[in-house]
Length: 420
Image (cartoon, one colour):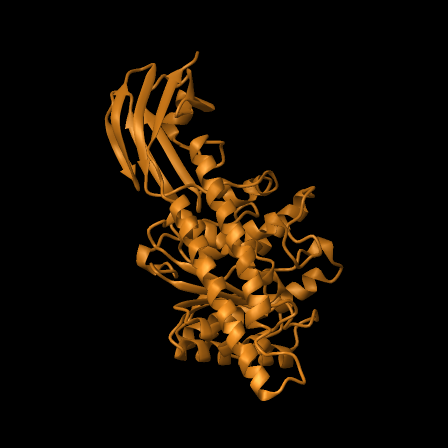
């Protein structure tokens, strides 16, 4: 491991303070794979489920045929050393194929950069990676999320510490066959731009823990760093009825003239649906064009005219012919039945994860019986707990299947009509 020079490390992305575009990459470079059994390992930021729910939501709606399983092993106050100590009990026992590790916030002890603290962190992260990879899991090392500096007097000083952790993780990952995911620098860029703009909203209200916007910021930073597919689907048509492009969808039954275009769109995925709070963050995330693009482009219409888009007869939005000629990202609009279906996936997913949280806190973390029981009583209690866990897992699997059933896309009728 190279020796760190304790100098200011932050070289921010120069794109108006917003998250930079993810570099194009082959689809097989994406960290997650079909049929993965994923464990999210981390501290209280992971235990909150904010960013992990969004990672799962993206993976289920974007890749609804992948049939993945998700588990959360976040514990408040934990560190990389704690994760190493419980790697078998909380992670390998679940037989994961993929693990994301998100430690660092507590490891730095909220101090300025310190070589002894840094070395301890890297040692524990190295041990954790080696133990999990030896157990058969692919590992993604996540640089932890940053401090929201304007919410804490020493926030930027602590961000220096967290930045050195990120630098160390990158080298550690390259040396140990793990995937490095830099969520720290892109997220910090957004936070700095928000502070510069004096934004009336935040992402980490206590400077550390997420709200719904913080969860979105983390999920966006993680997924784009992992080379997650940006497009839900894209359609390009002409006013003469020609389908030029149909990416991750089909466009059939097309009728078209200069005043009206109709077609049946069958997508392979669903767009993410964001809350009103999360939408406040969109200007800082390029409107999610690099993660949640649901595109429509129609060439050859009168550029000065206005056209109304309806989906299954539900009015969605009005665009100029010029906007449609350039292409629009519909993902942040209310898409009627499409939005309703994606929202149902979110509801099913978060319902499932309430049971998942109970399972982890009551059965994985509390694996032993109360004190003063005899050995025989302990064995009997362990057998009863195993039966209970089996019933919970059966229910979880039923809920998981409901999530995937809800995520299967359906065809919809699109109608673009001139209104003036």
